[in-house]
Amino acid sequence: MRKHTHLMTAVIALALFNPPPASAEHRQFTNQSQFESVTKNRDVATVESSPADYYGNSGFIDLGTISVITSSPLFVQDTNYYGSGKFLSAQQESPIYLTFTADRLVTAFGFNYTSAVPLLFYVDNFNLKAEPSPFPTSSFFGFTSDAPFSTVFLGINGDGIDLDSIQVADMVPPVPEPSSWALMGLGVLAAWFAARKRRGTGPAARALAT
Image (cartoon, rainbow, N blue to C red):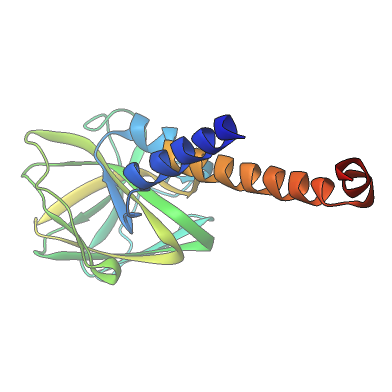
């Protein structure tokens, strides 16, 4: 019995000295590969099927799984300046405000972008302020959230941004921390001891004791 007691003591100590970390409400990404490594069920919206055109001074465009509204002139451009193919361009105003609306609840959002100047992003509905982008910039911005959402209100402190491959996705459930495994083990041990105690006080055990 002493051996089992020592085992339970060790499990309790592991749980106490390795407490689970507090869950961050949001996590930002500037690396697309890292973002995609922690997400699943991704829907990626592009403007490849949209005509290269001017979409209004307070522009709106529906990309199927995602729609975009801007506070500034909105264009679909077709040039080799940023990779190949078409991209979305919001220009001629600072700051720029973009509203992205997904067709479902998600827990992750991101996009590729480029700009002639460094940018600073604000996700207004989550009070999330991103670090200034590198320059010259052709990069990625994304974030995950513990709470599901379908709309992102994005403020940008530059006077122009080109973006493409707008993603919405779901977070991959995190792998349990060592302390979580320890607590699970503690529960299993407690159930085992309870079952052992019940067996030890049954009629057969009492008959043997006498």
